[in-house]
Image 1 (cartoon, helix red, strand yellow):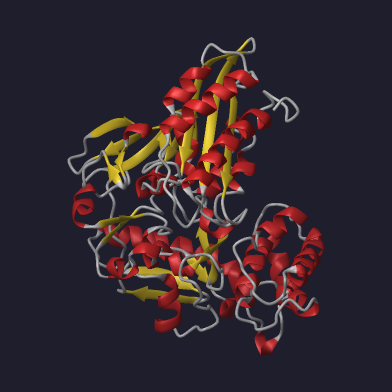
Image 2: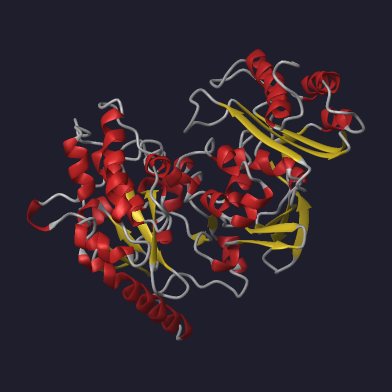
Length: 489
């Protein structure tokens, strides 16, 4: 039995955990403000807020999510907010809604709710509101009518209003100003009580809680029988009806599978760590200062808040953005099977062919490890797609170089979209070792890279186009890392 708060109502439901939150909200709770659009996480018309109480039980952290790709089971123990849950009494408008109206940001109105929810989520954030952050909050919402300028003006107006938001106890101010109803103040206590009741029920063997996990966060016996499901951003696009009819093993909210830590020179990620958590991690930002620029090319804010790193690996897409990035970092994964046995596998050895993995059906990823680049190392990630943002790659690539006195001592070069799997290019990388970072060394690597890849023509580009892209992106690596200048090329 799943339990969560939907707006100000406690929900208990036996609906399948693998069904979508969108369908539950619309068809079982009859809250039609949340719209059905693309059902692929692209348009943002179905955006809702999902709040999770912090470890201290004092505050709730809200994130915008596309409900069409949110497994219903991932709402367990959380606060789900639809537009009906923020609307003011007697038909009054919230400041977010009022700003959109004043700037003419709503025409046909279909997308408007998604923009309202994303901007409300931004208002609820504890981070300072800036012009960049308020625009980033709506990067997962598409509008076919307005041309976006009116919505950008509304976002700017909101950002100016939020300058008065106090850093301490902002929720009271937001409720006073009408951004959210006053019942939001009660949610930390309600969610904490819900968690306490669920723990007690689980200890007593009650059937009113979500499936229990073992001490390491994984019910490995159940994993043999059930489909493993993390953020849902891949599987709920590909197999929504199958997941609804199949038992699922939920990983997204397992605390043992989340988080980022550093052990000496090694950075360790829990398998259910999201792309957004990478972006917000001080550990990751210290190791990869350009990570915000890289991840800006990876999906949208709502999807980054849902999609997990291990999910990107196991999807085995030849153009998986996080996979390509972590291949160049030399990452390895830890796998655990149903018997509880662990083994470590270099990420590059996971892929045996198109969508073929070197793992058994009962194995799942528990951790991801890689050595933090040194301050003198060079690292870069590049991606080209039909749209600059919010699109899957035509070709993506990453490079890591260890430099000593201007000479490349070690190198890794990864590329996606140029073969049946995410791949390393060992011959091209090896050709750089022992060489200074010169145009001649780059040209040799480009030549060998062309021999190692086998792109095909498809909807994302012809074979010749993809070869050209990789050639050009290798040059971008050297320019972006400061090893060469555009004039030298």
